[in-house]
Length: 193
Ligand SMILES: [Zn+2]
Image 1 (cartoon, rainbow, N blue to C red):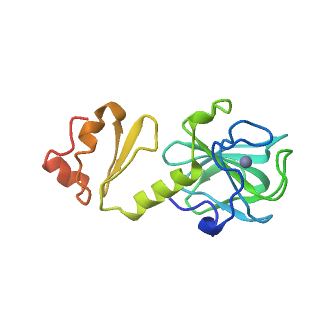
Image 2: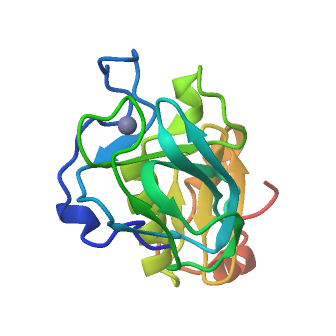
């Protein structure tokens, strides 16, 4: 997992996730104030499943990441088209297309599974989503759990990611940070999920 734009952490932010905008009650994603023709990178291995031109969003690509979540990048000037892609590949260039933009920026939103644009709670906060998953990748030998998703906790070991339903989370919090999933399995800390 990588940031979808270079200099991500120092990029000015416009509307954030859930914020009221001039055109909707809840913004579905986060707007990054990048100049025209900024490269947009595939954040994980995945697939560009759709390229569309909408009235409001302008040129938009739909990207499905390795966790099967759907990303939309909007207001683009150019896309490389529908295709499977490797992490880090340039998949588009940012712009200022569509009617809901007042200056060059990149709109990023990430939704759980299928796109339901009339239900903002089916979307993630992109900044949290990205930072959580980047830190998962940075700590490959630690057990790491996150409660980002509504339905599951993610627990990453050195080779394994476990998905634990919320109703079983009592077991998940018994995990020892710093041990591997394999060690925890041996010690029966993890199991019977
Ligand atoms: Zn936006």
